[in-house]
Length: 216
Ligand code: JAH
Image (cartoon, rainbow, N blue to C red; front, side, top):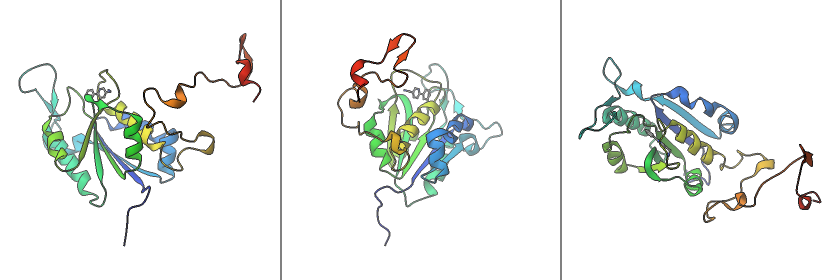
């Protein structure tokens, strides 16, 4: 009988109207993890879930105000389709938004233990709130912010969260760069408050590496 693995392969689905924006996931640490089969990354174009000839994904906000809001129907269809593709996994729907809770190392550590992240990357003024309300009744939904600033959309935040999670998976980092667990350190993360770092040469442009570090 199949049972829960300590670390099942992580599947990551990302829905965006700019799927090419996620191209960096083919590079570096995350790209190598994909090539090694440690993660299964799937990028989706939200416009493939529109029904009209113009592939419309947005409309004016009820109540007025600036900009446009993303229509619920394409999001509902996109997420239904992704969720229906594997009923055996336990998804977390991650929605990057400036109004979300602050994303921390604690989220990354928890999600690295799970088996499925689905990112909904909004644009414009965001996604019709009923999408989060509806899927919140079916699966875990996490609206997260990287910090107090506004981007043009959720894609860059999805890249950041993906990298923060994937580097924690066993076997993804090399031996020379192993993970220190910062998730329970209060405030600034423990290994970063140790201070500045140095490597060779010991004298560079008149600047010396602190004497105390040269003996080791
Ligand atoms: C902007 C949808 N805190 C980073 C962050 C995350 C998402 C967004 N902005 C900033 C965003 C517009 C539409 C998401």
